[in-house]
Length: 473
Image (cartoon, rainbow, N blue to C red; front, top):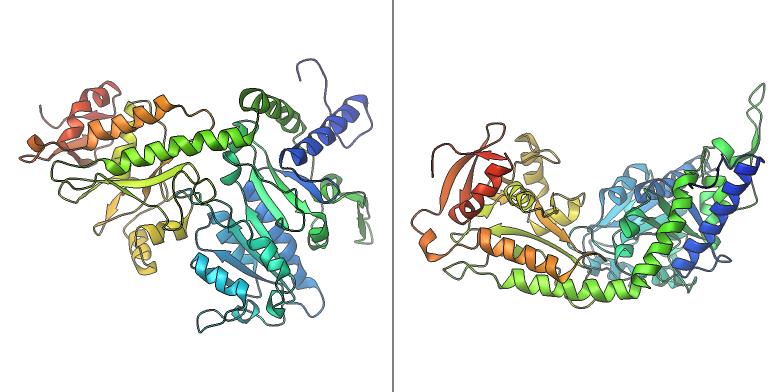
């Protein structure tokens, strides 16, 4: 990019032709990265994984305009990112939340009971089309869901499963695992992902589409930018879409061609540094197992566990088929109380540690892990809880989690640093029994209780100007 001039690809100028050539080169290279045959798949560049999901959802939504159609039915797994949950608002023929893997398995097998009959019975029975969506990896705790659900649904002989397509949210999965689309017969119909989560840069996403399912996206009503071959705007509302490829029909407006060209460099660097995604997978599998063992073994002076880790019973650290390198947890005191997620984050920042806290955009996973009912969540909202705030504990329960994610550049030293941080700051020794907490004031005036063990790091917080003492301690 420092030695060439690139232009809007919707033109025939030399700079535009150069952009078009480089974009198509990257498009094919990305498909190869995911072992997807370009004869069977196309890739649509979008802003991020959420935009990819929304593109599918709005295309399906437009089937409500077809004669004698009421839209589409939508099914989604409970352990899903909000981007998947939000699709239910567009499913005018009804939607279903599958509460567990078992419910999905029963549905795929055609087993019917009072809670789970057939897909279309959960909505308008006249709906011809359906969409079933789930994450390849939970963005809450990293557990990995079965990748064969797409092929099993496609092969199902149950009439209720006819014309139900699959949408896989692979955004969390592809960070540390090889997404293998080499068998088009078993691949999801639509796969959403973000490249920045794999490479760090560029800020770009994609929708990978099985060409045999492409027709489901070609009836969308909106058009814009270079997606049309001809438009009449005076005295007629006729237009004709481009028909050379799927991606040119769906990539609205000017492509982010600089970001797509930068993606080529990102692929080069990934290959140079790590050779393959399989190497990254093995590396992060070992690191996450070590960190999980370290955190789960920590005990206070009285034997109480320090970390309450939210792990699926279906997953196992050290097994990359069932568990990714993510750990979600909360910290308890020796007396069983909770240390707020915001307190953990502030103390981690003082150590130069980057982590994420809160609901992490996974409402179903949070509700299940923290045993929060719908009524309790509404009550928390009424109390003023909002995304990103520091209302850590309400009515005796945590409102979110602390999440640690490991990646290609995570080292064994990083694992030790974080393990030592939790042990040094939060593990209470016998001398902490007499006075286990002290009251401090956070910047802004709010008052929080901290464990005495955390005072060993009080100087670091004061140096960072994140706390001021109420009195000398």
